[in-house]
Image: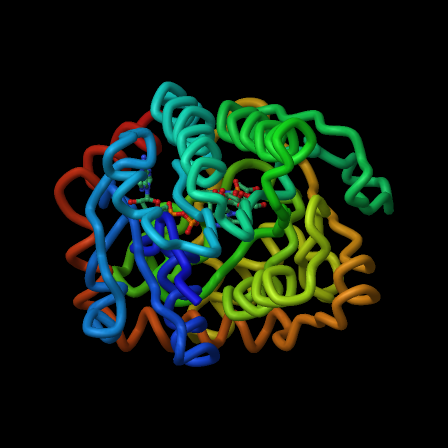
Length: 335
Ligand code: NAD
Ligand code: DAU
């Protein structure tokens, strides 16, 4: 089978490419990636001879046509993915996440691909009250609250529209917060680990009681594999962990304990505008229908992350320079 992985040089996309090569060695893999600030060819260097890499924008018709040639399955990861950047500058999110996804759908239909899998997020459902024990289901109403989640919601709607209107064989997965190797150090967990390794404080948005569900990235990859190989066309599946509920502050304290550091590394800073308080997914459907279960508990996932960032200092030191420093200054200086 020939599979096109968009955004395959980013965090989850590159982990997926590694996972797919390991578990589907006979398949041909094409990666289409614009190599934005978040894309990094080093994430794919270990498998460079096993894939075809095309540097290109998913909004660019000719790049997408070239990448889609002879493709049977599309796994669509490419996106602008960081909420704080979407608050600073939403435009790129609308272009890539909405118009780029539409270009892929249009070309996938022309090429008669057998499966278009869209990788989405729990954030499209909005937020849950901190005191509530509600968990979202695939049928829950959409209520995105940031430019990022609004752009992802729009892309989910377009994917469903292409299924309903034109019969494009699509599937969608909405996933919780991922952590793992090659994660860009603008997101909370890799930011915290690398800051501590640099002797810097961890900026925690006040009051730190917000709740996320944390999934080890390998579990996300196996969840997408289950949907691609066994999922029903036209369906949406949630992918999330089985951990108890932890606040951001509790997660940071766990990390500091693993790293043998005191809580003095925590620095409370001004909150994110419109900060979603809590996300919680009920992943019963993928478990019951497709037999998928997450393998990793949070402690093991965090330990793996600390080990990876400790052993791969050269990777993130290069990333945390140039444009990153300007972004960090803009994001945190006045908080
Ligand atoms: P990332 O920011 O690490 O990587 C995104 C990749 O897409 C990069 O390689 C980038 O170069 C590429 N890209 C961006 N714009 C592009 C364009 N116009 N054309 C081609 N390539 C482009 O993102 P990630 O964290 O790996 O997320 C991947 C997908 O998973 C996204 O769709 C995101 O919404 C979704 N998701 C992420 C998480 C998470 O916790 N990170 C959780 C749930 C869902
Ligand atoms: O839930 C899935 C989503 O998870 C994905 O769709 C997004 O692509 C991904 O970026 C992530 O979004 P979050 O906003 O939840 O992740 P982030 O790591 O940015 O923040 C996690 C929590 O930590 C959130 O409550 C905000 C808080 N935070 C974040 C940063 C960057 C801080 O307290 N301090 C920080 O410096």
